[in-house]
Amino acid sequence: MPRKDAVTAKVSSKHQVTLPRAVRRALEIKAGDRVQFDIDGDRVILHKRSNLDVNYLETVSETLGEWASAADEEAYANL
Image (cartoon, rainbow, N blue to C red; front, side, top):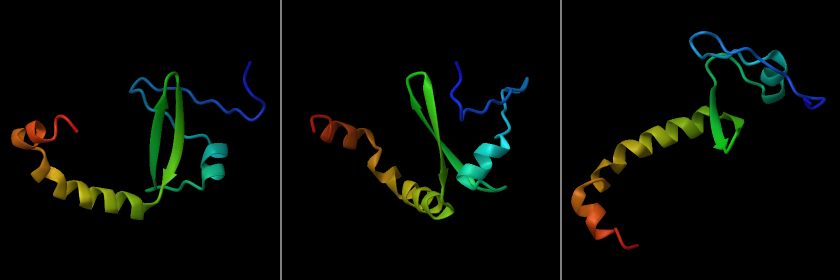
């Protein structure tokens, strides 16, 4: 039985879902905002991400490539 505050949406043929208005309002999601999906077994938790968080993570991830060599994997394998 669905929870009292549950809302539903239909998955399209392209496997897309429009966020229901109640969800957009609750999380204050607007066009261009970013969201994060945390998968926990058969449940998914949706979070609104701030653009600052996303920009920071994208910038930092670009600098981490130097730590992805085979030599690094071998050196840090037992940590």
